Amino acid sequence: MALSFWKYEGAGNDFIILDGRNHTPDLSHTTIRALCDRHFGIGADGLMILENDPQEEFRMRYFNADGGESTMCGNGGRCIALFAEHLGIGDKLKQFNGADGVHQAEVVSLDGQDSGIITLQMTDVEAVVHEDQYFFLNTGSPHYVEFVKDVEKVNVIGLGAEIRNSEAFSEIGGTNVNFVQITGDGLLKVRTYERGVENETLACGTGVTASAIAAYIYRQSHRERFTIQTRGGELQVSFSTPDGLRFEEIRLTGPAKKVFSGIIEPEILTGK
Image 1 (tube, one colour):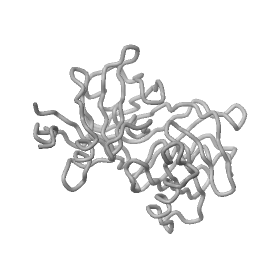
Image 2 (cartoon, helix red, strand yellow; image 1 turned 120 degrees about the vertical axis):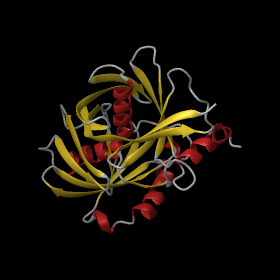
Image 3 (cartoon, rainbow, N blue to C red; image 1 turned 45 degrees about the vertical axis):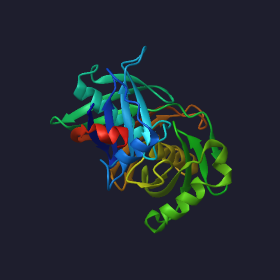
Image 4 (spheres, one colour; image 1 turned 90 degrees about the horizontal axis):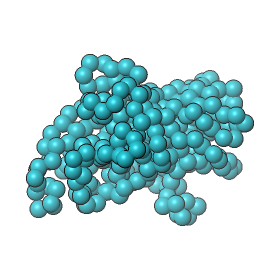
């Protein structure tokens, strides 16, 4: 049986999305890797399935490009909210379940039929580890954040892979790695190495969220709103903090777009 798919992107972070409300496809790691392959497949940083949920409007399941089911993806959450809008699910404010709990997403504006600006409420951050060289925190996915003078001169793939696979983070299956340059008051430039993709991505929603919170602690504690430039586009992060240690009302805002749709043939799904 052939399977319909949709391709979405948010600031260059791209995803294959499947509608699993009537039937959730049983995809192997090998099949997901093949579909996400940029040379022999559709090509994507990850794959998501929109499913029914007993309490919320829908459930988001996220798989990395390596085929493994993973933790929360911020840009993925914004894209699946736009997909839900295109399916006619809910109103402009949607509530759904993700791997890290319940999220709200707001369709701020629509630009024609295929794209819009989406705000995603992220989970609260209860603790931030500050070491000599880096910050570490979980914004739905684990993130290492290091501040640098010039992010364009960083060997993101080489250093990112080294840190991602270091023994310090082995107990959690490795970490995502962000290199951050402060370019002005409330302005950041971020490049991210993503675990599961095992490469630099054009943007990472949970990564820029982690970077903004780390920047608040590191140097800009007067700011609770940041504009972040990634290689794939611009994102905004806002939050509130009662004591500078816990972070609440975290919101990630940026563009999302439907790129194209198509059919996955049965032989691809079965690996024949």
